[in-house]
Length: 126
Image (cartoon, rainbow, N blue to C red; front, side):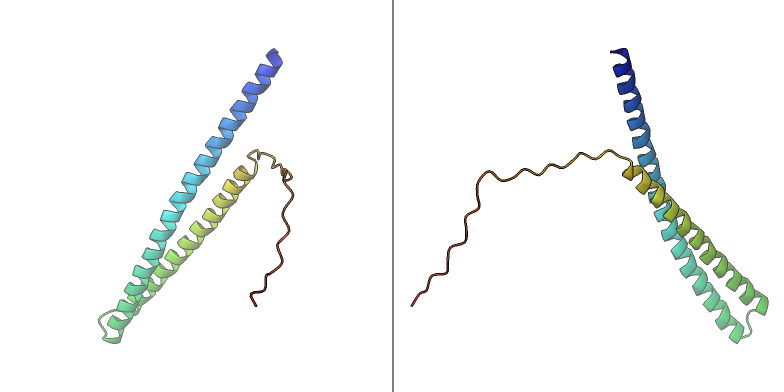
């Protein structure tokens, strides 16, 4: 009986580890979602800044260096967002693999005990 209790304890520990992995992966996924939202806002702001500098360039109130730096800053923000998106996909796959390893109860389909009634023929109202 000691081996049965040991196996049950090991199974319970594995279940706890799996639940902890799922919770951790889910929390990381939520964090990455928030970071992606912030990265999108950062891209929008950097695009506005780039457009502002382009207008200032037209009026000779900024230099070509300012325009180039704004463009590089925007590209860096886009690159950062792409990296976050890739990391989010990886975390999603990790969560999916944890979810897939959860035991599923088997579904049992029981036949109906009563025969189904056949539909009655249409009645004419003439």
